[in-house]
Image (tube, rainbow over all chains, first blue to last red; front, side, top):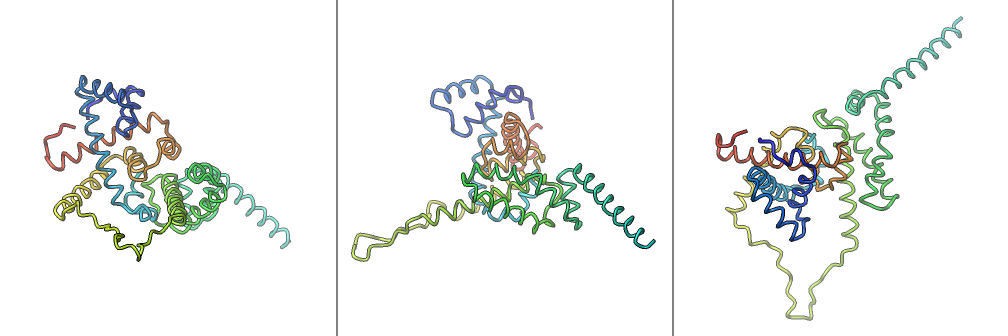
Length: 79
Length: 219
């Protein structure tokens, strides 16, 4: 996977994180989307991260968290 | 003479024990867990000493109640004790233990919430009052099948991800912990946590796209 500006810039990473979490206000969101529009590599990175986040949310909904407690594969393998 | 010999043996035993305790203290959590799995309970006691305060502080953020925290810490260590053989070294001990703790805290929260939930009964004297239909008809069987396949693929891809990325993604997106909690558990700076989560998610998407259209993604 290509190195992007997100790998070198902590503030940019924080913006991306907040954008994915839906924590940016309308103005910040617009500014960040404009930034992504002008930076194709970062745009692609953000698209992938956002898409996966949505899928992971659905996976989390489908998993019984209490079952994880007893060391299911996801828990034991996770670090 | 015999008494002298037994005193020597006693001090020898005490000395050896002190040495092995000192050695144990230098071991990593995972090594201690391995000793504990082989039946050496002193290793478990050391793990308790290492983590009881940290675990209490960590759980306090969830419960805001010291009594609940004490119970949860005790229950967590009890489960670590009981499930010691299901722990595998591929997982960091602290991550495994914090996951147990967080799930216990969530169960407690749900239990408390249930206790304060008001049950709504149908009013028998009101002909307009119909029981609520809870069945979700928005998902058709085909969609459900497709969704199941997507989730299976996602789980497979998650297992292919490197351990560093998988750990933080599971804690954030499956366990739904805050970045601060993840930084505590994984012992990483917040910036690294966020960066790993984003990169891990992006890599996961590449793996998924590779599964669907093999050979079309450049690494």
